[in-house]
Amino acid sequence: MSLPRPTKSMSDDELCDWASFLINRRAPESSSLDYKADISPLERQSDKIELAKDVSSFANQTGGIILYGVPEEKPNNTPIPKSLSECGIEVPSSFLEKIENILMDVIMPPLPELDIRLLNIKELAPKSLIMVYHPESWNKPHMVEKYDHFRYYRRGNFSSVPMEERQIEAAYLFRKASLAHAKDFFATGDFREIPSEGRFVQVILCPRFSLIRREEMREKEFKNWVDSNPPMDRTGYWVPFLDGWSFLGYPEGKFHGRQYEFRLFHNGGVCFTRELDEMFIAPTDEKKSYLDIKRMDGLIKNYVLSYSNKAFEYLKISGPLSIQVSLYNVETLRAIDSGRPKTWFCNPNIGEQPIEKPQLKFVEETSISELRYNTDQVLERLMDRLASAFGVWRRK
Image 1: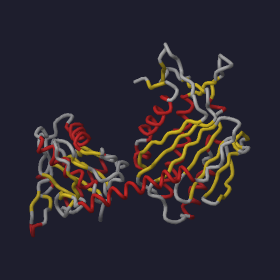
Image 2: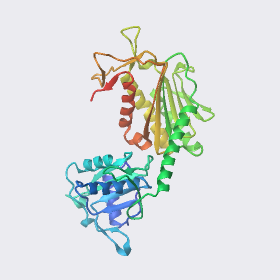
Image 3: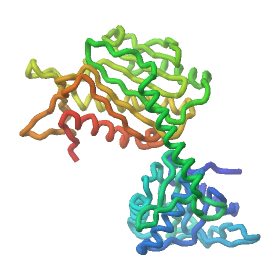
Image 4: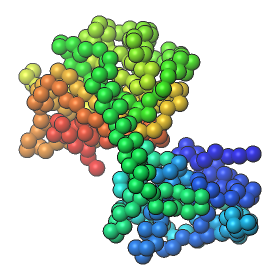
């Protein structure tokens, strides 16, 4: 029997079962698993550096887990855990937050998918275990930077070891190449020309680790799901194009005769284009047009991000993700929040600022796992950037 590596989708109870299983079967340390009998109070610089070395070494390699509160023994020089009854440590209040703050402060660039959990295994009460997990990072290499340390680490068999120059160089080249793929997709992808009449929003999501070949079976599964769950309950039909499939909504509109279009590319990218008419609030001044930022928030969350999540789930895509948001033909457009209570507001002495150019565009970097497990966090970043273009910001 074996259990998978932890993911952010696993509950605390599932993680407790997973850790208990590892300890009871006396699973040895490896290049993806490390046991620590205790953890220091993390007050000294040397202790903070040691923590950062251990965690970043997993992120810079193939990912891994550190379990604090598990003492070891070494028969045949291979570290294995002692019995579960000998495990557990007292964990002070807010200590997990302290660990996270140190890692975010000491390691650069910040770790994108850090997961820190307190495992309250029943047999250990009142003691617990601390789990620190990070998969292989899509934004590696990560440097232990603070306190003038400036070193990169990877995981060896049983400990963190310094990275060699060629390994650091290879990691940087891989990061650069994946980002270049997204930029090229945004610039050259077949998203259909935006009409000159009407106002439109377009959101393109590009996985930077694209599919190597067409996954026809998985594409079909996702297409069937969309047919059964049409966006906004507005049915449509699928049409093939050179690089993928296009779902055209039946409602008529200004985007090539339709109100919206959803494109699924063979490389795993998705594109949503929709006219903005239903996103407007009736203006009190005929010379002004207002985009309802509350409705836009709902559109991006319930339609764009949720359907993209489902596409990546069916296509089994993971890794870094670039999201490009564009508004077209929006010169002089303003934004306002119709919500009660209001989430966004502007400087009352200045008012909402109109867009000064016909097109508004920005790119946000994230990962597919963050989009899946922290959708609201990704949405908040997207909406904050969009609102700021109108001189509107979120009420904290």
